[in-house]
Length: 260
Image (cartoon, rainbow, N blue to C red; front, top):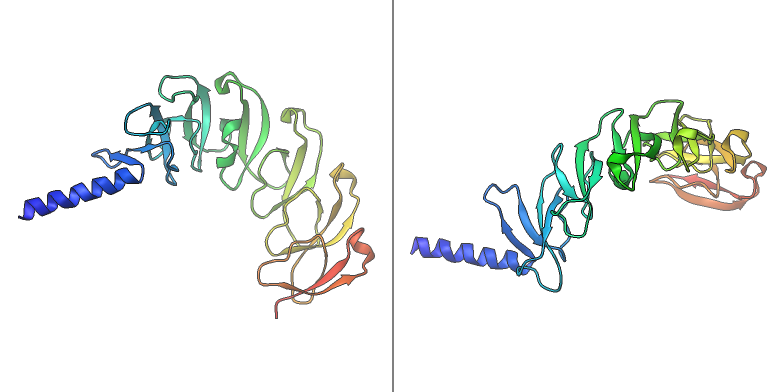
């Protein structure tokens, strides 16, 4: 009776997985097969796609597994950070999609532009251009961000950094360049920059180094600070007064922020 009960439990489990679009798990539990109608679980990549009878409605059967250095993946699937695609090519493994090779990021790595979304925080794009390893995508060089570093305009800006200038950089191809620095109280910044957590915009004015973007000043937030209306409101604060005339805010009105 015990063996029958275990068999029934395994059968019910398998039917449940099949109903959800999961066809089977490999014995090592490292690889699984899902139907293309099912989202790829977080932290997994697609390593092959085929047309089978297991998945209906025109969906391909996808083999997924955890990422690893040098692994070939199908580029229609996610690329989990801190991995990036370092080469792109055509194989028979991915159906109509391109195949890519992934590697973990390190300072100076060259990646392909179709994996920008997986660049880990703290890294920036410092140059880009045609690269045969990336097929139709541009190759991009990544470095660990530091104060005063020149980056390309399509690069992420790491947490705690702001853009302080927008120069033309030949190494960035079609993109405008940018200079990043860590935020501090009272610093000047360019309007195309993110505003770090805990900071507010307290002035808006033209800064020549910001190019086409309006510049301004950042200050650390405190209870009762007067900020410009184009400023984000930091977590835990709220607007207690608005519509305040303030010449320093340029075209924007000012508002008072409080947290108590």
